[in-house]
Length: 438
Ligand code: DOR
Picture (cartoon, rainbow, N blue to C red):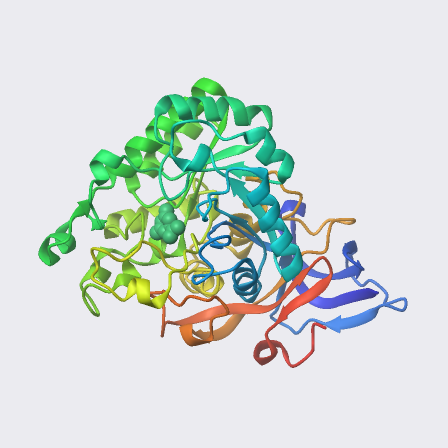
């Protein structure tokens, strides 16, 4: 069936577009993006004034927890959460049970994703068997099964030698190594950013350099090998300095920042309530200077992507002492409102730059053919409403978990519809009017 989206602002940085265009799709493909396309029998969808049509958003760092931790999330609930958040695609980390270090697990995840039929799922395989850091996983097998990158996320790649070999190996397949940067000896038993607030609350600290030392190691190895390293959930200003320097040398290094790291600081450990385990994540919320540096990097282009590190945990697991609670927060359903409210509306970045961060660059880094509204491309499309008033209500999340520090936040900007392969898989009736994007 042909559908013609008429009258919306189209922001498509990969094709240099930002203006009023029509988008004609046929089945699962985009036929044409142009001004004043005649309907010619296509079903016309009127895009209300103020709504924005963009290439499908891609969250390149999520935890879907299946197989093995289905009490936290499943591929079905995680992808339901993704499409509500405007994401047509996610890349899921391998720290499932068992670890995604072989084709069997990769295929299982892909099968679950196909059954759910919501967002596209691109698995990330493990760098090492069991993510133990001792022996490389069979990366060729993972690649052949559908993995688009490798990572031991949740932990760093254990040794410099293993990282070197992983970079050499993945370079042959044009895949990146996605790195959780953390020096285990400096992190120790830390649970929060090393600073005033952790000290006054009696929490063991993790300094920013625990992250940046590992980032420096990996960037040096990317330079040595010609492999591509992607720095996950960057939080410390020293890490961004290392990324900028590496890019200056021509190293193949990219990086992502999560919404919590550019909005919140370690002050949240103490207020509005202290010891809230929903502000415990790894890496931790850092000092204001770090937060501000992340914002600067997002604005000046040195940060490549925004990714949520969506890390669902069950209520019972989080409802314990701060020290023993698991690290991580959910993020898929709050990302777009936060990005509009904190980045676009204050004028820090343009909407076009936001789409680079949330769609174009993740696609490029993982070598996935998405992130552009090109003629003939697969019709993965997100429709945004910059002026929508959103109050974050965790009780209404589609995710199985509700561990968020953003509950009750009032934000401006949201999602009207998410279209995957030409199918409307999510529609926000309150924003768009019932059935509008059918
Ligand atoms: O906070 C985090 N949670 N950081 C990680 O690196 C892993 C993640 C998880 O899997 O829960």
